[in-house]
Image: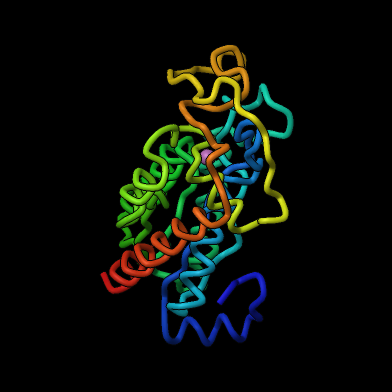
Length: 245
Ligand code: NI
């Protein structure tokens, strides 16, 4: 069930049988010459929605703009400051908690979100602790590529040039979700450089076309379908264990 297309009586009824919700969380940022700006939001969204269709849990709207200041040197990127993101995540958590949700599972699609999400949880728990109250809910963050069975399949499908940004794997997942948006672009160099970065100007100078370590021209919808199937199975197991915990 999707929160976006549910009515409030349907959410009321859902809460009588489950207190758990899955929240896809991503980013709107450049993903190289052939990657979609929505990649990091689309990946957790499609995996969560397909898993929900099979397992019956509720999926929230996608938190689709994250912490991406380092990508602002490329047209189209939108970022939240980490402090803004932490505040926004906690407004989502507190809204859901008010309705009685007790297990909030954030399925993340962007490395830059890991620290703000973890800090949001820590801020929320700190408020309960400092007030001397008992927090009635638990939050979990999981990166989709860390779900059981996903990393090994990424390495099998893309033994070279999967990379660490604008990866062949994530672009494949978005091409599966949006086959109408597949872009055929020649990569030069074939595999992008590896390295680190600081701000947007430094990133653009170090990684001129936006990729890090990847050759995403290997991505196809068919390869994405295999990755989504593996991630879906891993997500259902992880969510069911978390909702029961
Ligand atoms: Ni990404």
